[in-house]
Amino acid sequence: MTTEPVVTSYAKAPTRTIRVGGTTYAYRELGPKGGIPVVFFVHLAATLDNWDPRIVDPIAKTRHVIAFDNKGVGASTGVVPGTIEEAADDAYAFITALGFDTIDVFSFSMGGMIAQDLVVKHPELVRRLVLTGTGPRGGKDMDKVVGTTYWDILRATLTRSDPKEFLFFNRNDTGKKAGKAFVERLQERTTDRDPKISTKAFQTQLKAIARFGRSAPSDLSVITQPTLIANGDNDRMVPSVLSDDLHRRIAGSELIIYPDSGHGGIFQFHEKFAPVAAEFLSA
Image (cartoon, rainbow, N blue to C red; front, side, top):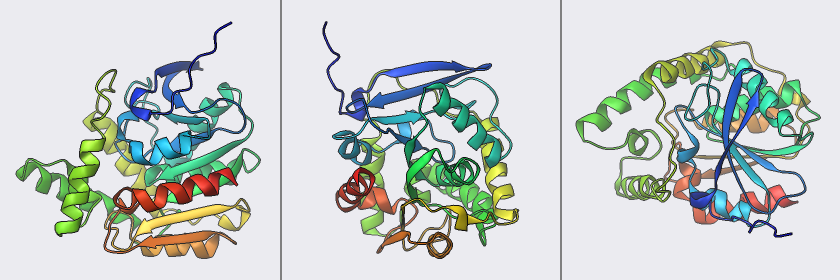
Protein backbone atom coordinates (compact mmCIF):
# COMPACT_ATOMS: atom_id res chain seq x y z
CA MET A 1 0.00 0.00 0.00
CA THR A 2 1.45 3.37 -1.02
CA THR A 3 0.78 6.41 1.10
CA GLU A 4 0.18 9.78 -0.47
CA PRO A 5 3.16 12.13 -0.14
CA VAL A 6 2.50 14.92 2.35
CA VAL A 7 1.82 18.23 0.58
CA THR A 8 3.31 21.12 2.55
CA SER A 9 3.02 23.85 -0.11
CA TYR A 10 -0.31 25.67 -0.29
CA ALA A 11 0.38 26.53 -3.95
CA LYS A 12 0.31 22.78 -4.70
CA ALA A 13 -2.51 21.68 -2.37
CA PRO A 14 -5.19 19.76 -4.29
CA THR A 15 -8.73 21.16 -4.33
CA ARG A 16 -11.31 18.72 -3.01
CA THR A 17 -15.08 18.92 -2.61
CA ILE A 18 -17.62 17.61 -0.13
CA ARG A 19 -21.40 17.65 -0.46
CA VAL A 20 -23.26 18.89 2.63
CA GLY A 21 -27.04 19.07 2.31
CA GLY A 22 -27.57 20.88 -0.97
CA THR A 23 -24.18 22.61 -0.99
CA THR A 24 -20.88 21.46 -2.46
CA TYR A 25 -17.97 22.97 -0.52
CA ALA A 26 -14.56 23.36 -2.17
CA TYR A 27 -11.56 23.03 0.13
CA ARG A 28 -7.83 22.47 0.07
CA GLU A 29 -5.85 20.49 2.59
CA LEU A 30 -2.17 20.08 3.20
CA GLY A 31 0.25 19.11 5.93
CA PRO A 32 0.46 15.80 7.78
CA LYS A 33 -2.91 14.14 8.42
CA GLY A 34 -3.94 13.09 11.90
CA GLY A 35 -4.54 15.00 15.09
CA ILE A 36 -6.53 18.21 15.32
CA PRO A 37 -6.71 20.14 12.04
CA VAL A 38 -6.25 23.90 11.70
CA VAL A 39 -9.19 25.31 9.73
CA PHE A 40 -8.60 28.65 7.98
CA PHE A 41 -11.48 31.16 7.82
CA VAL A 42 -10.99 33.62 4.98
CA HIS A 43 -11.74 37.34 4.52
CA LEU A 44 -14.38 39.36 2.67
CA ALA A 45 -14.61 38.58 -1.07
CA ALA A 46 -11.89 35.95 -0.75
CA THR A 47 -11.59 32.54 -2.37
CA LEU A 48 -9.13 29.74 -1.65
CA ASP A 49 -6.59 31.66 -3.73
CA ASN A 50 -6.45 34.55 -1.26
CA TRP A 51 -4.43 32.86 1.49
CA ASP A 52 -0.82 33.99 1.78
CA PRO A 53 1.36 30.89 1.36
CA ARG A 54 3.92 32.45 3.73
CA ILE A 55 1.34 32.15 6.52
CA VAL A 56 -0.16 28.77 5.56
CA ASP A 57 3.02 26.83 4.73
CA PRO A 58 4.84 27.27 8.08
CA ILE A 59 1.74 26.00 9.92
CA ALA A 60 1.32 23.09 7.49
CA LYS A 61 4.86 21.86 8.22
CA THR A 62 3.56 20.20 11.38
CA ARG A 63 -0.24 20.46 11.18
CA HIS A 64 -3.10 19.25 8.99
CA VAL A 65 -4.40 22.49 7.43
CA ILE A 66 -7.81 22.91 5.79
CA ALA A 67 -8.93 26.05 3.93
CA PHE A 68 -12.38 26.28 2.38
CA ASP A 69 -14.54 28.47 0.16
CA ASN A 70 -17.54 29.94 1.94
CA LYS A 71 -20.94 28.98 0.53
CA GLY A 72 -21.61 30.70 -2.79
CA VAL A 73 -17.98 31.83 -3.23
CA GLY A 74 -15.21 30.48 -5.44
CA ALA A 75 -15.83 26.83 -6.26
CA SER A 76 -18.41 26.31 -3.48
CA THR A 77 -22.03 26.20 -4.65
CA GLY A 78 -25.12 27.75 -3.10
CA VAL A 79 -26.06 31.30 -2.16
CA VAL A 80 -23.91 33.55 0.06
CA PRO A 81 -25.62 33.86 3.47
CA GLY A 82 -26.96 37.26 4.47
CA THR A 83 -25.61 37.14 8.01
CA ILE A 84 -22.35 36.21 9.72
CA GLU A 85 -24.29 33.82 12.00
CA GLU A 86 -25.52 31.85 8.97
CA ALA A 87 -21.96 31.73 7.62
CA ALA A 88 -20.88 30.24 10.97
CA ASP A 89 -23.65 27.64 10.70
CA ASP A 90 -22.41 26.77 7.20
CA ALA A 91 -18.85 26.43 8.50
CA TYR A 92 -20.06 24.12 11.28
CA ALA A 93 -21.90 21.94 8.74
CA PHE A 94 -18.77 21.75 6.55
CA ILE A 95 -16.39 20.91 9.43
CA THR A 96 -18.62 18.25 10.96
CA ALA A 97 -19.27 16.72 7.51
CA LEU A 98 -15.50 16.18 7.25
CA GLY A 99 -15.79 14.17 10.47
CA PHE A 100 -14.05 16.53 12.92
CA ASP A 101 -15.30 17.20 16.44
CA THR A 102 -12.30 19.30 17.52
CA ILE A 103 -10.44 21.91 15.46
CA ASP A 104 -8.07 24.83 15.83
CA VAL A 105 -9.09 28.02 14.03
CA PHE A 106 -6.97 30.51 12.08
CA SER A 107 -9.08 33.45 10.94
CA PHE A 108 -8.63 36.78 9.22
CA SER A 109 -11.03 39.75 8.98
CA MET A 110 -14.57 38.57 8.10
CA GLY A 111 -13.32 35.06 8.80
CA GLY A 112 -12.63 36.16 12.37
CA MET A 113 -16.22 37.35 12.72
CA ILE A 114 -17.50 33.99 11.49
CA ALA A 115 -15.08 32.19 13.83
CA GLN A 116 -16.36 34.17 16.83
CA ASP A 117 -19.97 33.25 16.09
CA LEU A 118 -18.90 29.62 15.60
CA VAL A 119 -17.05 29.36 18.93
CA VAL A 120 -19.82 31.15 20.86
CA LYS A 121 -22.39 28.68 19.51
CA HIS A 122 -20.18 25.55 19.52
CA PRO A 123 -17.51 26.09 22.20
CA GLU A 124 -16.76 22.36 22.36
CA LEU A 125 -15.62 22.36 18.72
CA VAL A 126 -12.70 24.81 19.01
CA ARG A 127 -9.50 24.11 20.96
CA ARG A 128 -7.33 27.13 20.07
CA LEU A 129 -8.30 30.32 18.28
CA VAL A 130 -6.37 32.83 16.15
CA LEU A 131 -8.21 36.09 15.35
CA THR A 132 -6.41 38.51 13.01
CA GLY A 133 -7.53 41.81 11.46
CA THR A 134 -10.95 41.44 13.03
CA GLY A 135 -13.26 42.78 15.71
CA PRO A 136 -16.22 41.85 17.91
CA ARG A 137 -19.91 41.86 17.01
CA GLY A 138 -21.19 45.40 17.60
CA GLY A 139 -17.64 46.78 17.32
CA LYS A 140 -17.38 50.58 17.01
CA ASP A 141 -17.18 51.85 13.40
CA MET A 142 -17.13 48.34 11.93
CA ASP A 143 -20.14 49.23 9.78
CA LYS A 144 -17.94 51.86 8.06
CA VAL A 145 -16.12 49.02 6.30
CA VAL A 146 -18.57 49.37 3.38
CA GLY A 147 -17.59 52.95 2.57
CA THR A 148 -13.87 52.28 3.05
CA THR A 149 -14.03 49.22 0.79
CA TYR A 150 -15.82 50.96 -2.09
CA TRP A 151 -13.51 53.99 -1.86
CA ASP A 152 -10.38 51.83 -2.00
CA ILE A 153 -11.74 49.73 -4.87
CA LEU A 154 -12.22 52.99 -6.79
CA ARG A 155 -8.67 54.16 -5.92
CA ALA A 156 -7.27 50.80 -7.03
CA THR A 157 -9.22 50.87 -10.30
CA LEU A 158 -7.89 54.32 -11.12
CA THR A 159 -4.29 53.16 -10.57
CA ARG A 160 -4.82 49.69 -12.10
CA SER A 161 -3.82 48.08 -8.81
CA ASP A 162 -5.24 45.24 -6.75
CA PRO A 163 -7.72 46.71 -4.20
CA LYS A 164 -5.95 44.71 -1.46
CA GLU A 165 -2.89 46.95 -1.90
CA PHE A 166 -5.04 49.85 -0.67
CA LEU A 167 -7.31 48.00 1.77
CA PHE A 168 -4.66 45.89 3.53
CA PHE A 169 -1.53 48.07 3.47
CA ASN A 170 -0.45 51.63 4.28
CA ARG A 171 0.17 53.88 1.30
CA ASN A 172 3.72 54.77 2.34
CA ASP A 173 6.85 53.24 0.76
CA THR A 174 6.92 50.32 3.21
CA GLY A 175 3.24 49.55 2.77
CA LYS A 176 3.30 49.84 -1.03
CA LYS A 177 6.25 47.44 -1.23
CA ALA A 178 4.60 44.97 1.18
CA GLY A 179 1.30 45.17 -0.74
CA LYS A 180 2.90 44.39 -4.09
CA ALA A 181 4.87 41.48 -2.59
CA PHE A 182 1.69 40.08 -0.99
CA VAL A 183 -0.30 40.26 -4.25
CA GLU A 184 2.59 38.54 -6.09
CA ARG A 185 2.63 35.70 -3.52
CA LEU A 186 -1.08 35.10 -4.17
CA GLN A 187 -0.17 34.26 -7.79
CA GLU A 188 2.24 31.45 -6.88
CA ARG A 189 -0.46 28.86 -7.56
CA THR A 190 -0.74 28.66 -11.33
CA THR A 191 -3.22 25.82 -11.90
CA ASP A 192 -6.70 24.94 -10.65
CA ARG A 193 -7.44 28.45 -9.43
CA ASP A 194 -10.83 29.55 -8.12
CA PRO A 195 -13.29 31.75 -9.98
CA LYS A 196 -13.45 35.23 -8.42
CA ILE A 197 -16.40 36.21 -6.23
CA SER A 198 -19.42 37.64 -8.05
CA THR A 199 -20.41 41.27 -7.45
CA LYS A 200 -23.73 40.19 -5.92
CA ALA A 201 -22.04 37.75 -3.51
CA PHE A 202 -19.48 40.42 -2.55
CA GLN A 203 -22.24 42.94 -1.80
CA THR A 204 -24.10 40.36 0.30
CA GLN A 205 -20.98 39.71 2.38
CA LEU A 206 -20.39 43.45 2.86
CA LYS A 207 -23.95 43.91 4.12
CA ALA A 208 -23.50 40.96 6.50
CA ILE A 209 -20.38 42.61 7.99
CA ALA A 210 -22.22 45.95 8.38
CA ARG A 211 -25.09 44.10 10.13
CA PHE A 212 -22.57 42.33 12.41
CA GLY A 213 -21.07 45.74 13.26
CA ARG A 214 -24.46 47.19 14.16
CA SER A 215 -25.66 44.18 16.18
CA ALA A 216 -25.75 43.84 19.96
CA PRO A 217 -22.37 42.54 21.19
CA SER A 218 -21.89 38.81 21.79
CA ASP A 219 -20.84 37.68 25.25
CA LEU A 220 -17.22 36.86 24.47
CA SER A 221 -16.51 35.97 28.10
CA VAL A 222 -17.70 32.49 27.10
CA ILE A 223 -14.53 32.12 24.99
CA THR A 224 -12.17 30.34 27.36
CA GLN A 225 -9.99 28.82 24.64
CA PRO A 226 -6.40 30.08 24.33
CA THR A 227 -6.75 32.97 21.85
CA LEU A 228 -4.14 34.86 19.82
CA ILE A 229 -5.19 38.26 18.43
CA ALA A 230 -3.08 40.17 15.88
CA ASN A 231 -3.37 43.24 13.66
CA GLY A 232 -1.50 46.21 12.26
CA ASP A 233 -1.57 49.52 14.13
CA ASN A 234 -3.41 51.35 11.31
CA ASP A 235 -6.24 49.06 10.19
CA ARG A 236 -8.65 51.16 8.11
CA MET A 237 -11.07 48.29 7.40
CA VAL A 238 -11.61 46.86 10.89
CA PRO A 239 -10.17 49.61 13.15
CA SER A 240 -7.15 48.48 15.17
CA VAL A 241 -8.85 49.54 18.44
CA LEU A 242 -11.25 46.63 17.90
CA SER A 243 -8.33 44.21 18.34
CA ASP A 244 -7.77 45.79 21.75
CA ASP A 245 -11.50 45.46 22.39
CA LEU A 246 -11.36 41.72 21.58
CA HIS A 247 -8.31 41.33 23.82
CA ARG A 248 -10.19 42.92 26.75
CA ARG A 249 -13.28 40.80 26.20
CA ILE A 250 -11.51 37.43 25.82
CA ALA A 251 -9.85 36.60 29.13
CA GLY A 252 -6.25 35.45 28.90
CA SER A 253 -5.93 36.27 25.20
CA GLU A 254 -2.62 37.38 23.69
CA LEU A 255 -2.44 40.53 21.55
CA ILE A 256 0.17 41.46 18.92
CA ILE A 257 0.00 44.83 17.14
CA TYR A 258 2.53 45.35 14.36
CA PRO A 259 3.88 48.88 13.76
CA ASP A 260 3.49 50.91 10.56
CA SER A 261 1.06 48.44 9.04
CA GLY A 262 -2.62 48.14 8.23
CA HIS A 263 -5.31 45.49 7.93
CA GLY A 264 -2.80 43.09 6.37
CA GLY A 265 -0.24 43.54 9.15
CA ILE A 266 0.18 39.77 9.54
CA PHE A 267 1.04 39.49 5.83
CA GLN A 268 3.44 42.44 5.91
CA PHE A 269 5.14 40.88 8.96
CA HIS A 270 4.74 37.24 7.88
CA GLU A 271 8.36 36.40 8.75
CA LYS A 272 7.69 37.36 12.38
CA PHE A 273 4.06 36.32 12.66
CA ALA A 274 4.01 32.90 10.96
CA PRO A 275 6.39 31.26 13.47
CA VAL A 276 4.46 32.80 16.39
CA ALA A 277 1.14 31.53 15.02
CA ALA A 278 2.58 28.07 14.28
CA GLU A 279 3.98 27.79 17.82
CA PHE A 280 0.74 29.03 19.40
CA LEU A 281 -1.34 26.53 17.42
CA SER A 282 0.98 23.61 18.21
CA ALA A 283 1.00 24.22 21.99
